[in-house]
Image 1 (cartoon, rainbow, N blue to C red):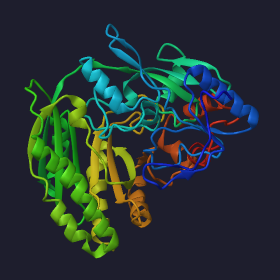
Image 2: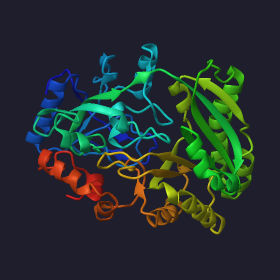
Image 3: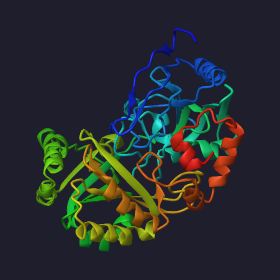
Image 4: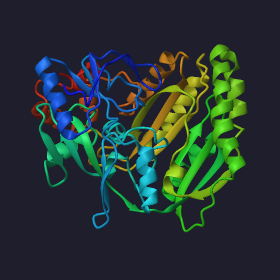
Length: 439
């Protein structure tokens, strides 16, 4: 192993702190050739390999006791093709850097999630998504990718080149190889007008289908122990740009959503009986506001309060009924839930292991403050979600295994067949993949 990318190792932890790993060595290859050398060397040494981005997954999908690959040196924009309207980016590039570069070039992704700290490979490999009536996840915007397989082969994949691998690797869980570059579809930069508005639980659930149909991007948060929600509607706008005022933006996005919320979560963790009262206050703290800006400044928000999360994708027509069950469960239990429940939507897509594969979907995400007991809450919610043929987000806490998932995903066998061909010796295996994909 050359000194250009070798690095001694220490304990690796994910962002939430609920997953740790002690790899034998950690490496940061600076090129595709060096990455291929790392994989061949690990195979010769009998070591497993996992790539890890910024650790924003709550599962152990990136954990390994073998070789941990950090993509710190595989960053940057390879190419912007204005005729094809694509951008090709190195796998370790953070989404926030990609968004900033595209904005300077007058371009944008069509849709994105609500944070942008992840690397592009980490975000797409686990199925990161936002909310959209017509536009789907970040992975659904991939037009090509470069994958280094277990034997060091560099595969270029697209609908026309290695299409079977392309169908699987856009959400590949790190099970097929190590992504070294991704080509995304882009479009000329546009403006979004965001309308944030408090709304009652009864109203938002009664009008859910209408709100989804009337808005390009609709989502809402329900505050457990209350009948209150906060809604957000994002729609394309002719402008002009009208971002939140500096003081108002700081109050809403930093002071209330991060600073005060951090204190509230700490108090709720220490004294659980205070959680319902805190929830009632928190749910009334944010008032209605409207602002207009370029996409990534509207879609994304800072998330400084650390938490753990579980999220399930359901058939969209089941979302309201399932959410009402979650509310009833919380109301009739001793649980104290200090984090709001998030609801988003996505159109059907054609990716083998996408949570929206082949069906219009709604997402219900539950969270608990880091360090607070979450198992009883998540177990109860998961029982409800699986009753509606729910598909767990690959990067968020769940207990499903390959037996369940093979029934939830019609194309599950297609994915595992590609895995068997590309990684027959399971160089990229770990405990999480053995559970969710089988061995």
